[in-house]
View 1 (cartoon, rainbow, N blue to C red):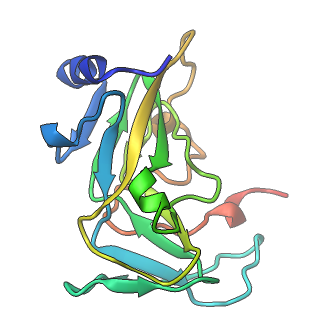
View 2: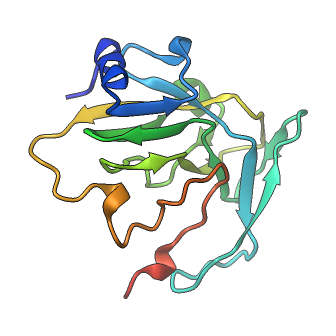
Length: 178
């Protein structure tokens, strides 16, 4: 079940959903619009290796915007910091973003109950497109959870993305044993 606008507001009042900064005008019928933070990152190497730490270079989006190019993976970050304590958050692109040929995530659209952070975006584009800090980039949708949670993401010993950040975070796949 997807939460409605009224239910999202109720959960914010209860403190089970936290969105900072929260702007009422960003609340849709059953979603909340999130915006592009001021930092992007790209991987330093063109060939990535899943078994090693692939380092990234951060840079700030200029006031004049930044042109994303095809065939490059950009890591972005949401302006909004969120916490979700009783629901499963899903980050989806906005139709206006998609109509510009911008994909905001390759596979990581679902958050875990207990996720407390900004969202790193895995941005790719179909053709060159100029983007700007603060532009609407996606929307959060919240699903109800059936059953009790045994371990929340923010209490997991092996959680790789718990450090609070305002910058995009690279893949931590290399921390897995395989």
